[in-house]
Length: 362
Image (cartoon, rainbow, N blue to C red; front, side, top):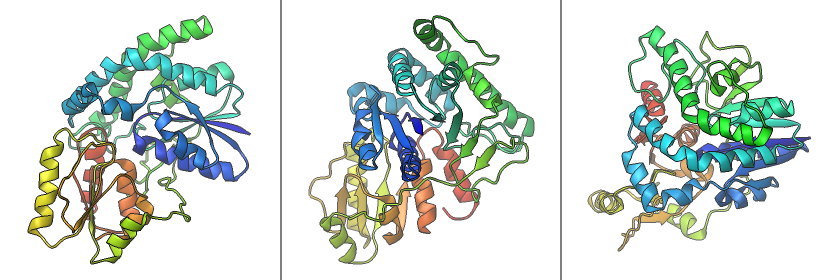
């Protein structure tokens, strides 16, 4: 059985889908993951097939244009949408072509929140589609669209917010999708309310990859939507670098600081803050650079800077975790049972920050 997984976004968006592919591969399935080149090694290491998508978010974020783009992003969803809209003409065609090519001969397609064009590919190939969402994007009266930062005591507005942003996203991508369909299929499929509305109306299996402790299934969600928990790596064979292992064993439990795939727009300021924490407290700090270009010179003895590390292995060994509130990092922190502090920047990060704080665990 050939399963094709369509991904997009940053490491936090893609890594959970690789873990899902890993488990599917264990059952004997041929699993193809469509992702940019910077994820090729991670994918192939798990025995999966990497299909290249020529849109590398990490590479883009490291350019001057990418840094300016990140500076504009705030908790305001309209700013986020406006900035994404500017990128669409350059990224859409390459992404859609990669998805279409990879899906040839597929028995099943697994898609995620922003996988552009998946519903058109499904309907042209007559292949079943399974949706995997790292955020709760099914309309409900219980809380607003996760990118909107307002009180959730307005039930009618809560539900309307999903349809509204669904429509906005459809309008954003409409021109690019129609052009691609015309070039690829010779005709254009049009759906009432747009492609995201059509996908929502489908009876395909939909999985919410987050904990039901954080979000219990709302009463007004459809039967084909299931909350299944976060996808985390098995990683039983993970071996930390000696420098990291020795640092952890050499004193009291450290505090982890890391902001995942968020680009640090003022790295010198953050470096100074981290050094100040170390110098003015007796805490030991592990700082994960992630996608930032942060460089700390004259590193104190009680500070260790790492590039990337297994959260599953590291977090249970920490005294505390300070992070950006991405879905995957939040889930790994919760599973480790360690106090966490969230500094959200954009997208769904404020939503997860509020959720864990409301439970009294952050």
